[in-house]
Image (spheres, rainbow, N blue to C red):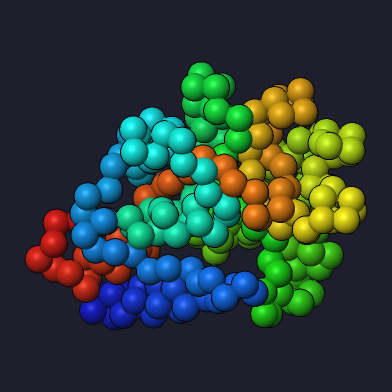
Length: 220
């Protein structure tokens, strides 16, 4: 059973690692040595650890686009944070406020890959959002009780509004948490994925299991 579980994890990690984006960049696999050396700044009661780039001297001023942020985290057996509970959401927001961080990426993204034309994901701007790190679908954006989308944005409309595309730019396909950016509190916003933001990583169980399974002599 343990071998089968390991093979399943291996298959999932390899499949996601080979995901290629339109610009030729890829979703990178973990690097065992970096996983073993990963920095954890805080752990929540469930035991999962978090890395805040602005707290670490080497990355204090580092900002990455959405894929760059994911790859930085994934190399270390982590991923951009997936906000799966109200408690986790409030915990993260409190850190942004306390440490005066303007914004962060999450692993959230609208499903815009091959296979995303499924009926249950339509319309995509309502039903197509998911936590990519966990492959977990978000509640529809119309269900305002099950998410934390802001009621305001750059054009005065509730989020997600796809503002940048409407104004002639890129589609806003990635989910960020913004801290009073539009004087609207600390809330979720859809943002074009090429923007650069600080990195908030969360330990990823699948990547940790994969590295432990393939590197049994390495303490991870």
